Picture (cartoon, rainbow, N blue to C red):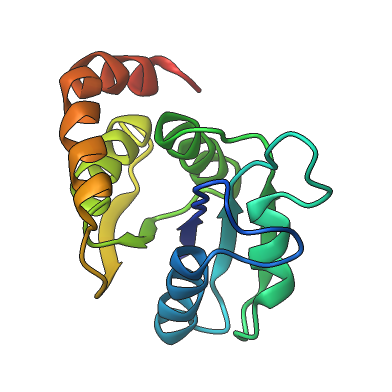
Length: 160
């Protein structure tokens, strides 16, 4: 049995490298609480223009959990990109379970997209969220993002 622990990046563009955004740090901390020595951890998140390190690289550098292996996906710029990276990684390692770690306000949308990306893989999805609440701006952004979730879920399900 192989479990993939997927930690999704976050950046609002304000934190200056090499500082990890507090939202990202909370996700890493939550993931460390949930992992076991045999797990494979995926850090997913891109580097904004002009930044030397991606969110994924910063999360990996911060990691202090005891796990078997780390995967770093520097290309995911959106939640859809994160979901596709999770689906691909789960297939590559033949994961039987995926533990998705993100923020409580992001978890509903992220889990729909990751579930679509895992379609046909046989991996079961479990979601663990941080305790933080959404700011009004994040809440509005999440609400707006839901308008395209059905289309993005189709894209995620067809991307291998």
